[in-house]
Length: 135
Image (cartoon, rainbow, N blue to C red; front, side, top):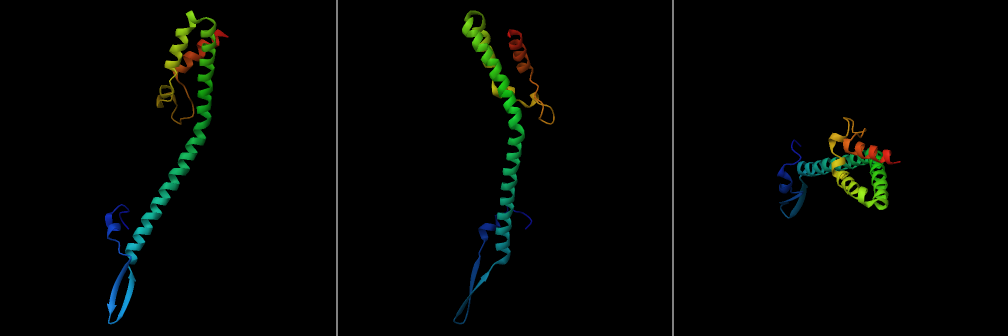
């Protein structure tokens, strides 16, 4: 089984019949059967590996995602409150924060260290600092 993706599966003939006189016998094509089972086993292994890797990635990334969401919630909550109290001054600030704290922009690979464990995004730092000054 050199190539698990070869098209030999379509030539698979699990049973071939031969007739000897009045007796018909059935022979298994063992090589084809091995190839089909080998390919199936390979695909099952790849699928299980992907599932466990995805789960590990989710488990390790969940905590940092929670911290980022907490920071965004803090910033937007403070600014929304300020915009309600003083819409003339903080209304535009709040709207700017909503645009700049877009999740797709925050989660760019450049916001993380090489191990993807430390989050450092200048936009988030800016907005957290602004809200800390408002306290």
